[in-house]
Image (tube, rainbow, N blue to C red; front, side):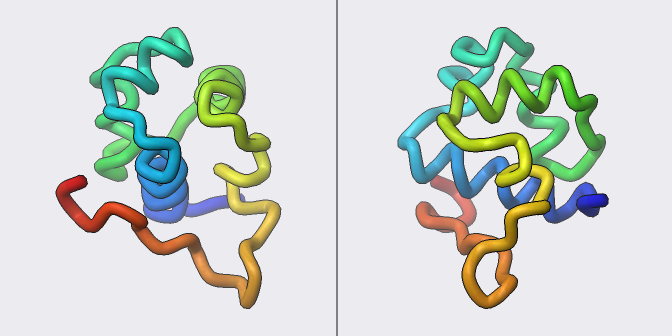
Length: 85
């Protein structure tokens, strides 16, 4: 099972890779902005149903976010936009 910190990092990575703000992702996924912030900050994990909506909105598989499908060399994707992007 993925650690909350890994989920936060992966979600932030894919969101920034797609050029989406937290608000845009929340709207596309049908979840609240505060929910996306809570996951990205590592304050909470996510239930599979909501995470599935978020993954769909990002155009990635649920396993990409959960960490079941490891990126090459087993590393978590690096943040493409830096800490504040």
